[in-house]
Amino acid sequence: MALSRRKFVQTVGIGAGAALTSSVWGRGRENSVWSAIEPDLQAVERGVICIASNENPVGPGKAVLDTLRSFLEGGTKPGRYSNQTGAVTEAICAHFKVKPENVLLGEGSTEILRAATQVFTTKTKPLVGTIPTYEECSGYAELIGNRVKGVSLNSEFKIDIDQMAAAAKGSGMVFYCNPNNPTATYVGAKATRDFIAKVNSTSPDTTILIDEAYFDYVTDPDHETHVPVALENPRVIVARTFSKAYGMAGLRQGYAIAHPDTIKKMREWTAASGTGSLNVFGLAAATVAIAQDASFTANERNRNKAVRDMATKWFKDRGMKPTDCQANFMFVDIGTPAKAFREACRAKGVLVARDFPPFEKTHARITLGTMEEMTKAVQVFGEVLGKKTTSAAA
Ligand SMILES: Cc1ncc(COP(=O)(O)O)c(C=O)c1O
Image (cartoon, rainbow, N blue to C red; front, side, top):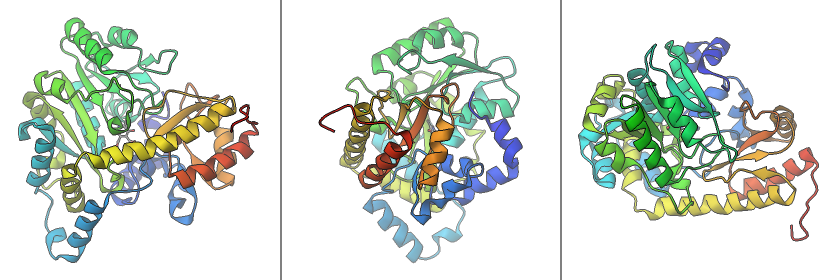
C-alpha cells in the first residue's frame, strides 16, 4: 500500500499528527497530515500553487462565510462546548429525508472512516480495499493491528468489482471509495448495487463502507448516491464530507448515513456524542452549507468540470493519458516517476501530490485548482515534462 499510517506515525510521531489535524484550519485532512512530511504544503499562503491535496480552491460559499463572520462577531457561542449537534443533524436529515438515528457526525469523514474500521474489522476479519485507495481506513486498521487485504484495480483504474467481491468473503469491512482517491475513477450506480448484492449473499457479515467524498463532482450519467441503500441495509454505510464540494476542509465536518443499528455501533466510537471533537464554527457552517439549494453544488461541479476538461485536453494533446476523472483531481500517466516530476514542479512553485504505489513510476495525482492556477500549472508541467503538443488545435 501507499505510505501507511503506521509509517506516518513512525515518521512524525502520533502526537504531532493529532495536533496538526486539529490546528490546521485553512486546509484539509490530507494537507494537514502530509504537510508534516512535506512541509512545503503549508506554503500555500505564500503564493505557491498547492494542488497536492484534494481541496476546493475557492473555499466555502457566501452563506457559510456570512455565518462564520456573524459567529465571530456575535458573542459567546465559541465559549461553549460543541455538543450542540441538533441543528446540523436536522439539516442533514432534511437534505436526505432521513431520521436523526440514521446520521452520525464526525470531525471530517476521517472520524467516520476510523470509527467504521474500528467497529467492523477485527484481528480475524480484515479490511478489504483497492490498491491504491485513500489510506485512512487501511492506515487505521494497521494501527490497531487488524489485517488489510488489497485488491488491484482493473485496467481502467476502476474498482474491480469481481475481484473485490471475491476478496470480501469473510472480511469485516470493504472500503469502497467511489470516486476512488487517487485514481479519480467512478464505478456506476448499477454495478455498485450489483456488488453490494453479491457481497451480501456471499459474505453476509461483511460491512461495505461507501465513501462518497467526491460524489458531488461526478458527471458520469450513471451515478446515484447509495444513501437509500444504506438506510435499508445494515451492512452498508455511506460516508460524506463537507471538505470537498462545500469547500470546508479546514472546518472538519463529515458524517455517515446508515441504518440505525449500524449508526448505533459506530456512535460509541466517536467523540461526537459528548462534548465532542466537533467545533462550533464547523457545525454552524455545515448547518448552513447543506441547506443551500442544489445550485450551489451544481455550480461547483460545473466550475470544476471546466477546469478538468481544460487540463484533460492539455495532457491528451501532449500524448499523456489521464484516467476518466470524475472528481476534483486527476490521475495522469505522465510516463515518468512522480517523485522527479513533483520535485521539478516544486522548484517552480507548483506542489503536486505524493507517490501512489504501485503507480509511482508513471502516474501523478494532480488536484484541480482554479482555472487561473491550472493555466499557470500546465505551463510548469510543460516545462518540466518537455512534452510537445501533438494537436494542431492546442
Ligand atoms: C476519499 C476520501 N475520503 C475521506 C477523506 C477525508 O476527508 P475529511 O476528513 O476532510 O472529510 C478524504 C480526504 O482527502 C478522501 O479523499
